[in-house]
Amino acid sequence: MRRNDPFTLIELVVVMVIIAMATGIAVATFRGESPVRKLSSAGLAFETFCAGVRYQAQESGEDRIVYLDTGEAVLLVKTPLPPDTREEDLPQEEEEARIIKRWHFPEGFTLDPDTLELPEGSEDEEEIELFRFFPDGGAAGMMELTFTFKELKRRYRISPLTGQMSLMPEEEE
Image (cartoon, rainbow, N blue to C red; front, side, top):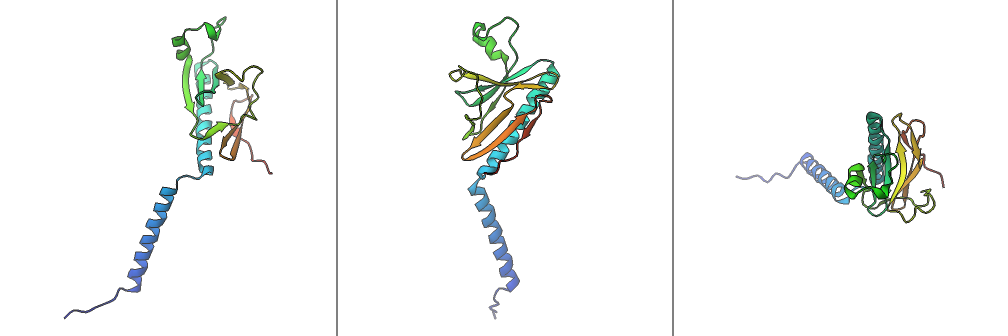
């Protein structure tokens, strides 16, 4: 003889919890990162990049210059030019040899053009010097940069004395 026992309440609750957890994981996976999270991740990567360049300048005992390549949306780290040498005079392979490191902007990220204080006549240049780190740990150049992603902005300030980068507090609107 066969008995028809229905499911117990505990069994039903366990199955419902498992389904809810699986649904929650699937939604989080397919939805992707939020813009705020993407901005935070990119900001952390940028801070890490700058800290590495600063450390490299201290370690090598030589300046490190950070350029913005306007055509490719990339930051380039270069060694300084030898004395009495102009960039135009260098052969292409020597110019490429000066590049130590590259940092590509994540997709959709830009430097806010309103906050870039570019020297006169530099708007048409392919590479713009943003700042440089010195062997003593200091920095010079643009001391404030603003990253944008969609409608979100993050401001960073570089200390001229220590060369350390810090996130500026958000302004109230």
